Length: 340
Ligand code: SAM
Ligand code: SF4
Ligand code: SF4
Image (cartoon, rainbow, N blue to C red):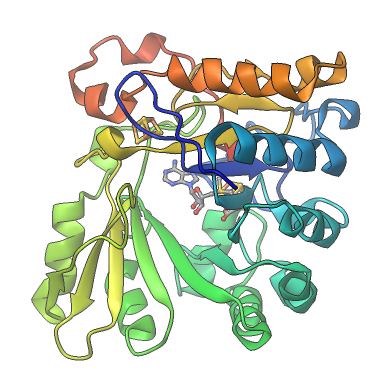
């Protein structure tokens, strides 16, 4: 297939697509879906508003045609709370041109599904784990789920032959003391651990710059006890800064959206569970593709619309964040709608 390139206003290609399959989640992480706000009265998307698997497959196929994307990442909310997700993975693995399908998950339901997901065509999982301390982890996830359940998911994913990475969001006052225990635990395994700076996504997590543990501080905390050194990115636009342990060469990463933004190479589009194309994690709104599709638009019309949205893109929120004094006035899409 001839490979297309679609460039935005800042010359950035569209390379990969993150698909949120649900806005619901079995966790209530304080930094993402705080339980006081996402409570029993919270209005999640009605079922009819959420894209069907057939619609997700069609849009993915059209993204390949519009921009030559090769990578898909399935996310949420929590993707594994969506019924029959394995069927979607199988459908997406049939899309011509897609070479890599990954999933970001909290891991709580992974032990049950890992084998089937792998058989359906999933290549890799990124599992979020913010602490090894059981009590602290139960508190962070807001659902009293213990660390052991996530480890069962990690083991099942490895056994199934899925690639496994771990994400840990670091928030000051919450889990900065977990950085070193996590490094010690995973450094001699095949699992790549990545620390994520706490970000001001959405409007509900009470973000404050003082709660951000910077890439520099994370690096120093690790390097002081276990020496690490920077290594080159795997590809242009990789979000994690990569390091390796000086003793065994294993990799570790830090994702620094706040203190060292990477907007200049940002090549990801996000599709929300209700079919909006979102061109930045911090956008106020997305561009509807669902209603256009449901109104009977042809493939050509859909591709034209996708191209129009991407080529009109000029987002660089993280590069502007610290100089934007009006930031309180910006209303942003919640993380649970677009999945990171
Ligand atoms: N539920 C899945 C999970 O937790 O892995 C997928 C969706 S979750 C929104 C995707 C990633 O975003 C997770 O690794 C999560 O830790 C991260 N995340 C959520 N809120 C964040 C925040 N405020 N700052 C930094 N990372 C955040
Ligand atoms: Fe759910 Fe993931 Fe958000 Fe935690 S980070 S509340 S697991 S969507
Ligand atoms: Fe991309 Fe927006 Fe994040 Fe910048 S702030 S890296 S444009 S998602």
